[in-house]
Length: 114
Image 1 (cartoon, helix red, strand yellow):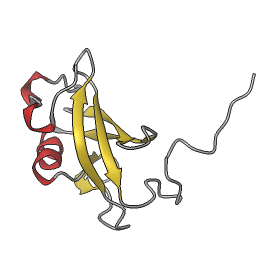
Image 2 (cartoon, rainbow, N blue to C red; image 1 turned 45 degrees about the vertical axis):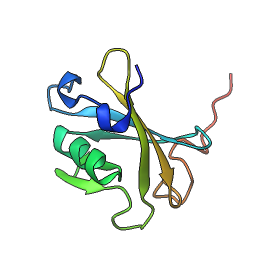
Image 3 (spheres, one colour; image 1 turned 90 degrees about the vertical axis):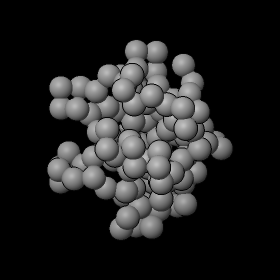
Image 4 (cartoon, rainbow, N blue to C red; image 1 turned 30 degrees about the vertical axis):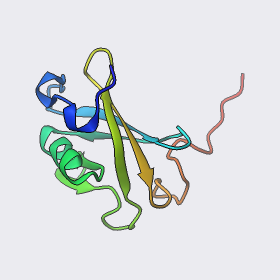
């Protein structure tokens, strides 16, 4: 179920027992998966309001804007919920590498062979 950014119903989403929901971040142009983060209701509201991807940091126990230290922000294009409303997909435009390692994606570099 794809919803426009301004129409997503936060109350319809299924947050886990820690009040978090996984957020998959995808490049809006290339469709490459950039990263996975977690959001609480407040970080999702801020993401929608400011159009900058904003997470809940489980390690720091605080809200953080992706790019607040690196300058590599993720500007939101669209947000959609999955069929069970227990995960969200955010299509965004990155202003630089997404991963802290300097790679475009946090999912690069590891290959499994049979």
